Length: 336
Image 1: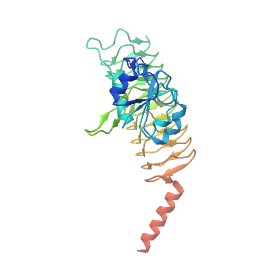
Image 2 (image 1 turned 90 degrees about the vertical axis):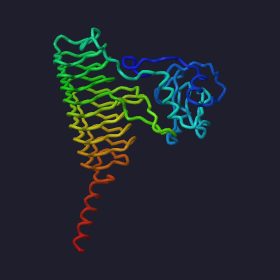
Image 3 (image 1 turned 120 degrees about the vertical axis):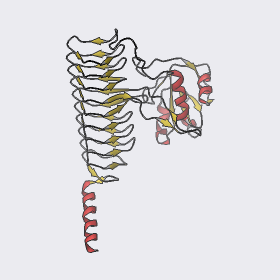
Image 4 (image 1 turned 135 degrees about the horizontal axis):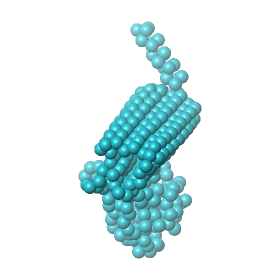
């Protein structure tokens, strides 16, 4: 369930109402007046939740889902269990975007025009808030934490003890641990880049997840870390992130990872503990980098990387293979 500190839910909605909103056909014998309370991920859904499934690769998960309703294509509808209402539609992801907009009609923070520090904000007496900083409603700032000039802490955001938040940082929809260093210009918790195609152009998918940053993380200047669509974007303990890194929605990063400048990590990637990602590396979405893996600079990742594996190149390949190919090409050009 989306965090009520950041997102305010409307509803519940009946299955009949949701089918109309989504442009879907209700299949099965479940009462159309059954109430659905929320939207959820496949993994976290309960009988009161609505989910969607549009990827045939995930069809094995259908018989196991515990949701009360599922937006699904006709091709996958037969796999929906009898305990779950199937809402059959042409484009489940686009339909789900409409439904999120009904349950969560407002997904952007509102800002006070009267106070730089909201009366409901909880700021430890030992914290330092520099001139021009904004601390919104119900935000929490821990002991000895320092907010730089013009830093913005959004509604409901929690920042732990002994953190340093640099100038012009904006943090929304996020929970920050202890001893976290956030350098100037960083943007945390903004919308993930979520769109689905339609005949009239891209349709925005509301982003109602969070960013969770664990203890002892350092984030370099002008990085961006997007909040999740439904689940969370997670940065594990002791990760070190260089300047100008983009981390997209629903990325899950393990402990003590290193990400060097100008790297871009696309949505829903999983990065194992201790992985090292070099400068200007690009990762496509939904891939897994194993623990201790090493990705050399300017590599393009199109596939999973095993734990401990070192890769290089575009597309990335085992690093020894890369250098053998470079050497072979050098020999060929010398012969010419």
